[in-house]
Image 1 (spheres, helix red, strand yellow):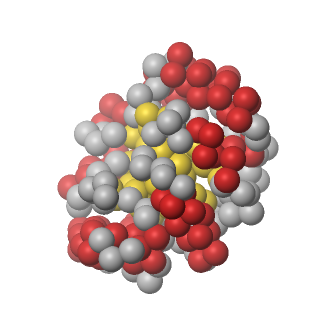
Image 2 (tube, protein in one colour):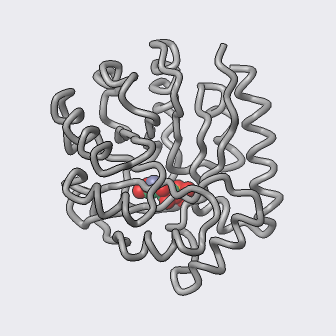
Image 3 (tube, rainbow, N blue to C red):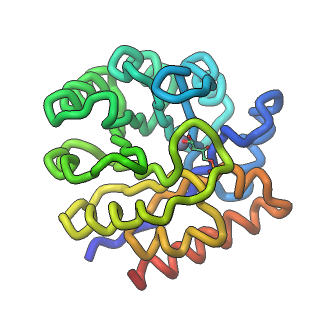
Length: 227
Ligand code: DX5
Ligand code: ZN
């Protein structure tokens, strides 16, 4: 069995955007392994967030890797901008390149742009099975456990079957769960085979942020070996 390490990636969507540097330093000091940055284009999802200049500004103050989640219609077009801005993981959505050929073209564009780690994501109502063809070409598979666009939504437990399916099909890279991850849902994610945990409202809304990250890590580490 592959030995996996739990990674906690707080979503900056729930930080105070007027105090990003302060909140980055705060979650890093609290134990964040990565920083999850949600990029939305008002087209693929019904919300607008941030673009490459802000990612670049974050990269200047961050000391942990940037985990950039592109919820945009034309990911290849912006690959270079996000790579230059300092993205470590760059994830696109399968729904905008919904065939192995189209997805491969996006992956190639990301690699050509110098992206270190490439991720692909599926929405809660998208079948993950075609991703089997891409297991050797991606570093991370992001399973959306809410419909993308907003923080603070309820976890959709049915997506846990996708994680189990990916592990049973032999995928050994990172599996990241995004949406509604909190103290009540993290154990089931870990048991299913998740190793990267995004949490926005559950971390930034917590009274004790270091304690929350520590308890997420210990629960996930314990449960990932049970599943
Ligand atoms: C939703 C984003 C998530 C979001 C998660 O579209 O992709 O990363 O910030 O927020 P919570 O953890 O509050 O569900
Ligand atoms: Zn996200």
